[in-house]
Length: 131
Ligand code: SF4
Image (cartoon, rainbow, N blue to C red; front, side, top):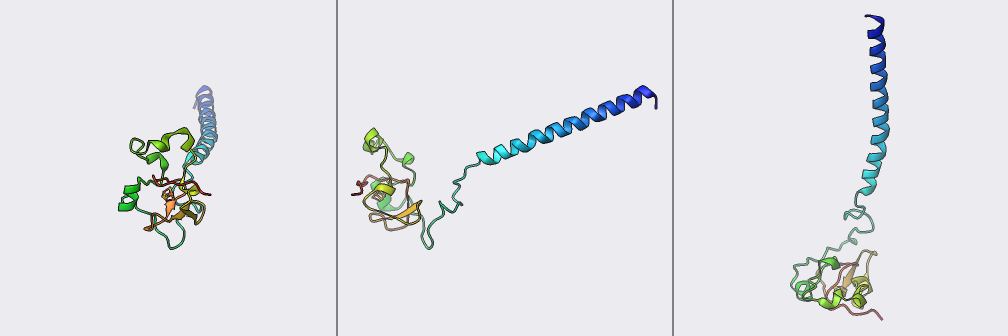
């Protein structure tokens, strides 16, 4: 092996090694960022877990449908329930409804809907301000 070839080999090896170290240092923070970007509320966290022995109310339940209930207020049919879309109604949620009894912060029992627990962030057309 000639001197210049050996020098080229060492130089290209150092460049490759440096590129490897650089990319490794970049990948680690990127994976950490990706992990942070994952939704924390995926239904498996302790805070959003259903209360022991309870089942989630099915939105297709006859009474739930009749009341326009959804676990996420964003799913409300605002053409049918325009009152919920008004600025003064922006804080209407099951969690502050007179018919709601909190079970674990994320779920609770509704006096109007007895076939399961409702999400604290839900809403229906029978919402009534808690006294
Ligand atoms: S009556 Fe109240 S607690 Fe029950 S579903 Fe409607 S908004 Fe939620």
